[in-house]
Image 1 (cartoon, rainbow, N blue to C red):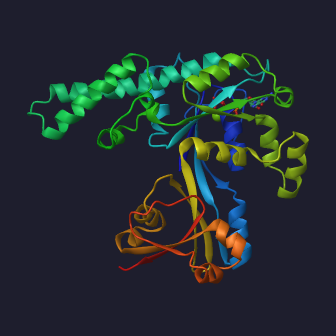
Image 2 (image 1 turned 30 degrees about the vertical axis):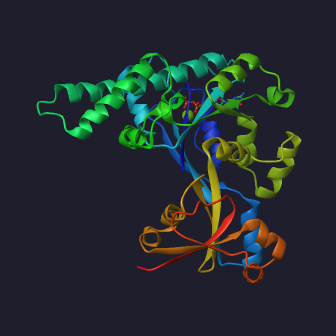
Length: 357
Ligand SMILES: Nc1nc2c(ncn2[C@@H]2O[C@H](COP(=O)(O)OP(=O)(O)OP(=O)(O)O)[C@@H](O)[C@H]2O)c(=O)[nH]1
Ligand SMILES: [Mg+2]
């Protein structure tokens, strides 16, 4: 699972990256250029802790999310430079829009949050439109006769071209599974789920009052986005404290959870993600998959050999384990499900894959 952090210059992208991943990359009041920070955040899950306390494995592995922090996108940049910045996050699964609300005369940059969201929307549209037009142009100029697949691709791209030219995100439209497959290698930005991170000052965060709040919320809703409030500077500092100290400072901000915990809670739902667990070879481990994933594909997440040699999945429900206290008791009660390749995995399933290679 990869998320790209995008935003206009000096809105607090790297600050957010640091607070989400616990890293300490340089933040500054001067626009960065050519940045690409990559970091991994741990998805804390109390269910993993419970499994770990029950099975006492040698190793406990939480799910992770990879974040990529890039330079700011501003309308004035030459399109070649914008393309270079966007290329750094090609292939991410979702975008985190960093939107600045905090005011600081010492830090230049766009302050109006609505303008920032509109700007980013526009840049994504432009990006995708350029990709579509390039590919259509190439197909049109092709000296050879187009293959059957190319003709289908051309039809889909023409449709995309129309949507994008009408100022509409591709995510607003229904594509068939086949169409999605055929355009997946373009990695269109306007097809990706978007989470808005509002970077508030401490005062705005505490009071929950900030400029253009109503319009901003409407814009977020209209565009099928979700948002999370972040107190960037402060939370970054908290994330760099010793774990024992963090809680005290978070609570002082009125928070029960860290930035990454809040983001995961909202993000998993918005992105349609769920978690399953494995308990094997002395390791308790959490895995993230899309809601609706079949057992055999979930197996592939663990290892391609398991997908290839899939025989069956033995599935216990997390809640049953909590209630009954052991796998043995689950079996005794007949609650261990034996499922084939096409079974749909549910959130909290504890899976033992049987396979043969
Ligand atoms: N007052 C205040 N300053 C902040 C906050 N978040 C970030 N800053 C400051 O804003 C400046 C830019 O922060 P960065 O995190 O580097 O912003 P960025 O979006 O990564 O900037 P570029 O990569 O240059 O586009 C730094 O001086 C930060 O300390 C905040 O919540 N409050
Ligand atoms: Mg930065």
